[in-house]
Length: 212
Image (cartoon, rainbow, N blue to C red; front, side):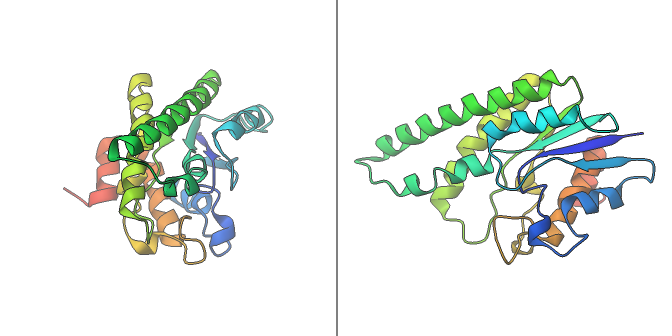
């Protein structure tokens, strides 16, 4: 019996932004078989440095997990949102500043992954989506730098990746009350992609792109 645990932030813990029973974890339970279990440990607002508490909570679950999925880092990036308005003398100066933030993010993300892998269970990670309505082009470019960290670390560690940039692509995938959160439609897409992730690339391709 599979027991998938969702870890991270409000990408998975989006219940406050949708109708009751329409959160990502609810949709994932509907996608899986009756013998499979889903536990939500992700917490709205958590950042990378909060993840050790979530990993510690795994040991207290009444049923042992079999798979972990982490979607975290978006709130860390939001912490730099105000600083993105900082004036600089040149494009090179701007890139140097972004490089510093990317380096800091990388340190935190690697430390988080070290903690996740220390649990010793199959692990998948998610990127940060970038089709949020109203997102400025400059922010889109900045997000690519942080997603590069996530993808690079996943490849180096041989981890499966749920690339939310190709899952939540429509304005309707984002909650009307808070556009940085998944809507009911977006949560349904995320859940379907999560269910397919453990079934192989073919299944995931069919979820994202339709039958070949």
